Length: 284
Image 1 (cartoon, helix red, strand yellow):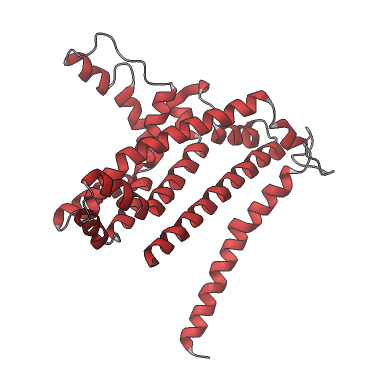
Image 2 (image 1 turned 45 degrees about the vertical axis):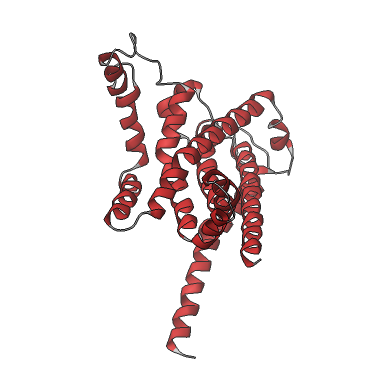
């Protein structure tokens, strides 16, 4: 066997072992724990039961699920509305300006998102930069109550997750065949029709990938609602954290995690389905 094959097999073995040890095995343990019981003496215990999933039918948990989906969905929509034009502009530029704008997208990754979330407090609090500027300009007379509201949570989510929307869309726009755009315009389509009938369908895999990369973290990030939303803002991430670390009800926390995994799998299947449809249209 050639040395290159030895290295390839060794690398694949290490990768698969890593994935098994730190991804598949913990996932299996979480799923198993979701079907177990809980007591004051034991974090998990037999016999197997479906009570943890039945508890999720409670009105309180349903409300948390609904609120998490609404906030995550609205944050994803804002990221898409803001990120798509920005990604399109970056992809179409050439030279140093493209590199500069791409650098602006990547720079936030150089700082912890936790630190950036705390920095937002200085901007949106009652006597923060935003309110002081608006009062100075005479736009408002009294400070806006933004901090510790759902609006603050959405602002924090968009601020932290926007790069995850921009990068996949930018990649798809860069691979866009300009001949198709030119053909649409030659056939009489205006800019809006070309964008709606040609550009959007061809970049749909990037849009869905960006929505997945934003929507799922938006539901599960627990520190942003804690910092910017206060005690009133409890999303799925906070619920899982509280069940594992505060209530020490690992089975219930595992059940919530399992439901989120089902949501993740569904979104990935949708992404694969749309990607295959896009490839078929390109072949035709």
